[in-house]
Amino acid sequence: MGFSGAPRRIVITGWGAVTPLGLTVEDTWSAMLHGESGIAELTTVDTKGLPVRIGGEVRGFNPEDYMPRTVSRRLDTFAQYAVGAAQQAVEHAKFTIGPDEADRVAVLIGSGYGAASHLQHVAYAERDRGPRAISPFSQVTGAIDSAVGEVTMRLGAHGPSRAQSTACATGTDSIGEAARWIRYGIADVVVAGGTESCLNRTDLAGSANARALSTRNDEPTLASRPFDAARDGFVMSSGAGVLVLEELEHALHRGVPILAEVRGYGSTSDAYHLTAPHPEAVGARKAMRLAFADAGISPSDVDYVNAHGTSTPIGDEREVYAIREVLGSHALSVPVSSTKSMTGHMLGAGGAVEAIVCGLAMRDSVVPPTINLDHPLDAEMNFVPNIAQEHPVRVAVSNSFGFGGHNAVLVLSAWEH
Image: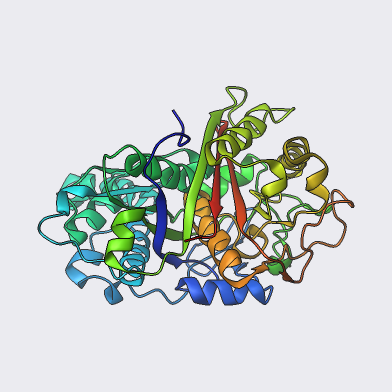
């Protein structure tokens, strides 16, 4: 089922982010508008012998700004980032759960890799020091729901809580499914998003051996170059993005500013290949069309597309084809940019941060650039090369297409009274 025909509307009242560009939404957004890159040589990973030595690290994050040391010490960094972004989001939304509404507040935060670094640490500890070295909290900390569980407890939310994983589409799917919870009366408020921290030797080696990563080790800020002819792979990054989604009347009753409306969501599976997109982008095109139908919009209504745009040779080419097919001639006039050119690919967190970017583009009437774009894959399209562009945005589309053939698309619109 989709959103169309259902009476409950979903709005965004708060957001938070922790990214390689900044430790808040506004810091990240400012860096994007200035075309800054968050990609650098890795400092927290021993890269000796690895074919890739660069990534998008979160720099300067202090978990004790958001939780006691007794909590942060037992959490993987992916969960720490989620708690930080979630706390930012609920504070931005001016939302505190009252005793009478806790049952109507839900949490849905996903991740592609989960507690990857913690699980590797546990394995090494058992190997080197034996079973007694393993903490009794290790299984809870290592579970993919450790982030959502921690956020739920800190908020006091008694509604449904869930962690989900759909690879690079996770953040977008989490927001879309959370919106459905509100749409169909399961919850009135959902704290939703994605989080990721997978910069470690094992995951870097695996992705590099799959030839998915850029090897521009000597030019890290130039490595992520979506839609550019010289692209050679994505850049792995960490981060988190969390939004407060709220039923419209609930938000209006609270009297808080409404940042954007979640209008539509489409999700499909390629059922084709573990890492390669369908050669005709069938699933991607269908997800876009489903999201448009859900939102009740036509292609000509779209003012901005935040592309998945990972900087991979095949993926970027297929996405351009999908956008052209779905938007038709309008694809040549609508700005399409990839903020992964600056953040790198935050995997399960990417779609959530990019949904926030769509909301900011609507707020400020400016679209962020695709940096490192010197020789566009499609010379007729406006990929917002290198410099942000002023552009009124009333309807924005956010694409996320993941390994395993996961496709997810959101349609957001500016709030209209």
